[in-house]
Amino acid sequence: VEEVPETPLFEEDLKLITDEELVWCIQQLPDGYRKVINLYIFEELSHKEIGALLGISTSTSRTQYMRSKQLMKRILKKSIPDLYERKLA
Image (cartoon, rainbow, N blue to C red; front, side):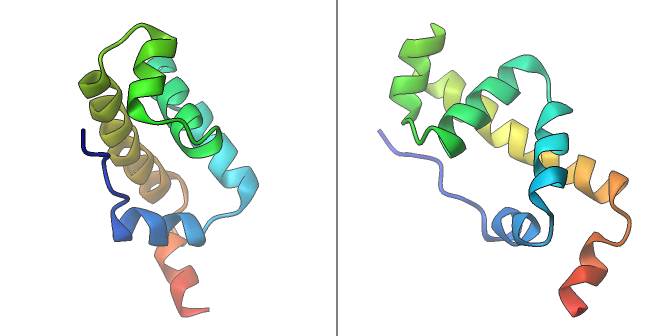
């Protein structure tokens, strides 16, 4: 079973924000997305482990993780207008 790789663009976005902004952004996610991203990123569980813990399939965990990253990216772009100007600083 293949894990979803981090997309470089998303990783780069996370380097531009503060811990407080990251926490706020994660709090904006729907409950299912928030649970999966927290378990995957902070608890470092595999999608198989997350699926077992939450009672969802491994593929659902992977899908929710991918969608949560996409939604976080949109939230960050909308809520932090100067996000990409931070790269230049």
